[in-house]
Image (cartoon, rainbow, N blue to C red; front, side, top):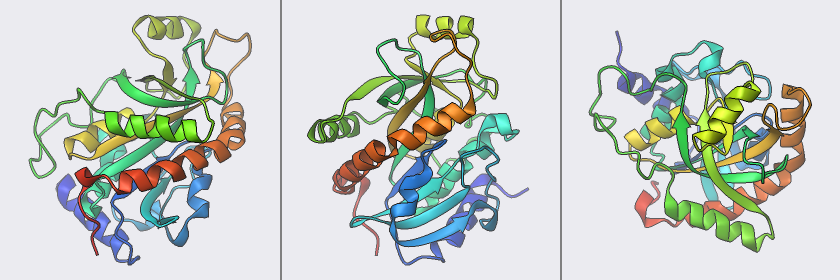
Length: 284
């Protein structure tokens, strides 16, 4: 059986052979938030199914391709969509794209997601930079034998979400006259939305938002020493907060409505991360 490191290396080389760009920053765009990738210049688009061993996205609102291109002058690798545990994938498969990013030379990632708002100060359409997460998905992508070529057996998660990147995001949001909240994300399995009782429980344990992604990507990224910034879009208020049913259509509609603000924030933050000496010089 071929190991994950070898598979990730083969997938990374498959992607890099299709573009002259060598980005150090990767992005993952969540439900309804994929339009940023459409605006890149010098873009090469690679469907997930054309990349060896790469899991295919089945969720609505996830285009299922990697786009390598430039946002302004910054080369980036963008996942337009992601895969989730609820699609039937294992935790290791969900984290595999992050492994591929690592083998491509990505040293920082910006993760976005659509989330349900638990914090009562949030409104539908709010943007929230994540300060931490609570993994309630019942497993961990690092479970099983550890491959030291990726990272240490017991990676520290104290600063999983880079403090300096969060500061950058808040500063750029202020310049754009944009409200940017900060909060803790709870990751649940899905695909059913949470019950009102579960939302009350999540608020009690310190969660501000809830979703079905992101945590595994962050764990895998930190295992490899990749720095993380994550931004949630509150596409709906969580169950029991408003007296109305939840729907994926609402998630998509809200993502469409806030995309301009999110894209402006991403474009403002990217040059600052590109200049972070902590992610090393750009490869040529």
